[in-house]
Image 1 (spheres, rainbow, N blue to C red):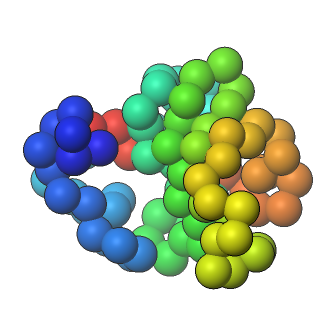
Image 2 (cartoon, helix red, strand yellow; image 1 turned 60 degrees about the vertical axis):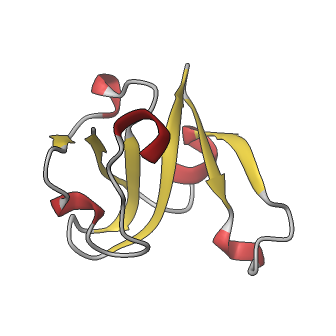
Image 3 (cartoon, rainbow, N blue to C red; image 1 turned 90 degrees about the horizontal axis):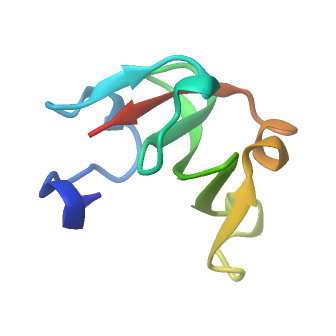
Length: 91
């Protein structure tokens, strides 16, 4: 996100409130580069990914901490099978 926008995102909670971001509330509105929030609520979510387009996203899977499989492309369906889609932020 920084390379494209020069906006520094916080690690953990707070992404949803970064100045300049627009909230996206529907999976059908996602565009590549959107920061997707999963599980919980807008202010207390469990996981974050970056939308890649065509129903896919990039993330580091927290189920296998400390991320031994690294950042991988996964489907949104794979992620939402375990955590609900909360929303996304577009910068």
